[in-house]
Length: 259
Image (cartoon, rainbow, N blue to C red; front, side):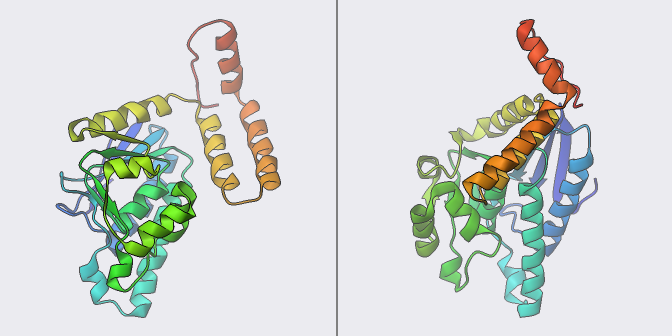
């Protein structure tokens, strides 16, 4: 895994991916390509059951897209950047493994969009969040208008998107933009604790669970229930289901094999 702008460390079935463009870790076309490629690698890596995405340094998780690059792009170039950003975020969102955003600082624009593509979000108490695109004469282009309202509700999403103003970590917690806020020195250890717990879960059941939730969020209730039933059958047919139920009856810790 040799990338210019990403670092990846794997331990205890957990991959920690760091955006490495400090101090602000802006997203450019190369970063999007690298994110997509690395997620494809981690998808098929049997030594990885859960993933953490964070930013390098103490100032920013990701302080948005690289405005210096965007300033010089024509419409065709901007559409190409938008295409790969969408692909990268969708790859993260639809990965079969749980992904946690460890938000260590500023999460602005594309940084918020990256965090929203993850399953869970843990924030440093020093982190700040905003969708400032409207103040630049544009709108979010990496899923912000769609994923944000699905997480916090349409009214709150419109407030954040229309005003483009900064909120702190505690406000982000209150509106359910993040799942947890911790002191900055505890951020990565907390994210690893969560990720290691998730990495011990039966992988097929976890995959089916994520697919059922993600799919159900975008279809009508009856279609979602039908899809859930299919995912339930897939999980029920596994050896891990047998082990999980057997260990429950025998009052012992299960030993899952991923089969």
